[in-house]
Length: 222
Image (cartoon, rainbow, N blue to C red):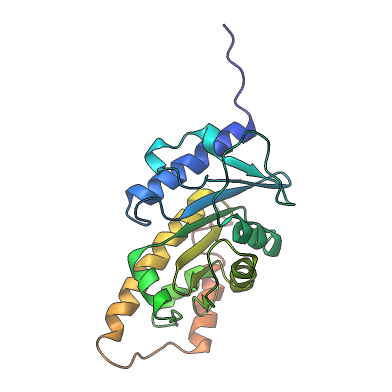
């Protein structure tokens, strides 16, 4: 029997499941917390609400249209779908989003502390700091506005009294950035216990950000 070709949607559904499971297995988001999505057509594919990651299958991933409509017969999408949608609208260059309750990022988020330029790797999120956006109840349009604003000029941000969000051009990039944010959060939280923190200057960070534009790219000469 001839196998049916794997569609782009089917492949992306599998990638969302794999990314969500990897996030959970790594300890980045405990229990059923957090959510993962990828831009698709006029909307997105997002993890469902309340389903354990180890039980999740590609058919459980929910397609949410740009206007918020959900296909008939699907599971309910993550309650946080509003801020995923708002982030994609704000950042047309990004195609994947990972939201987690990782330990150290959440500690700083609950302390309402931005991660400043204590280390040059803070620039991995696209700027001289990783901001913390104001608190709003989970699943609300208000929170969606805050998150979209926080990601307007950054690829990651903290959510006050909640957790962290990271975006990428791909799911693997978004997940990698979420891990980077957690490492930086742990380093900064430990550094705060030692006393006042000396920060890099805006000029220092500007140089790093410029270098990051070509970091990892192949030489033009091969």
